[in-house]
Image (cartoon, rainbow, N blue to C red; front, top):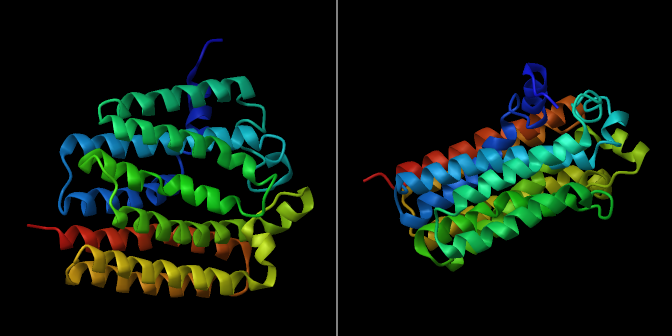
Length: 287
C-alpha cells in the first residue's frame, strides 16, 4: 500500500497529535519525578529521552485505544468519525503504527540503564491492556492511572539506578489524580457508555461521582504535600501545590450539573493543575 498525504494525515489524527492534552497530562508527572529525583534540572539526554518517549507512548496509547474501541466508537457521537471506526485507517494499519511507536520508544529506552529498560516492559504492558479494561471492570481509570504514572518510577530509576520510597508515594498519589480527572472525562460519555455497555468509574460512582472525585482530589493534594515534606521541599514546592487547589475547586464547579461539555472542560483543566505543580517544583530546585 502506498502511503500518501491523506494517509499520513489520518495517522496524525489517530495518534491525537491534533489534541495534545493527553501528552501534557502524561508529561507533567514525568517532569515532577525527573526534577525531584536529582533535586534539580535533569541531564539533557535523560530529559530529551523521557520527553520524546512521553510523546511517542501517548501516541501509541491512542492508537491501541482506538483499535480496541473500533466497534464501540461508531456508537458515540464524539468518536464516530475517528480514523479506524470511520474506515479511513484499517485495523491492520493501526496495529502496524502501534508496533512502530512502541519500537521507537523502546529504542530510546535502550540509551538508559538496564533497570529502566526492564521497567519499560511493564510500561508497555500497562499501555497495551488499558484500552480493553472497560469491557471487564468498572475501574479502567485505575489501570490508566497506573500506566500514565509509570514514568515516575522509571524517571527515578534512570537517574538514580534505584527507586526510593518517595518515588512510590508520588506514583500512588498521582494515580489518585488521574482517576479523578479521567472520571470527569468518563462523565462526558456516560450516557453513551450506558447504552453500549462500556464500564467506567463515572458509571459505578453514579450519584456519588462528584463527592468521590472531590475525595480523590483531597487525597492527591495531601499526598503531594507529603512528597514535598519527604524531600524537604521549599516554599515554592508548597506554594505550587497550594495554588493547584484553586483548579480542583474550579473543576468541581464545572462538573456541578454533570453537563457533558463542562465535564470535558474540567478534564482539560487538569493540564494547568499539573503545570502549576511543576512550576513550583522547578522553582524549588533552582540553584
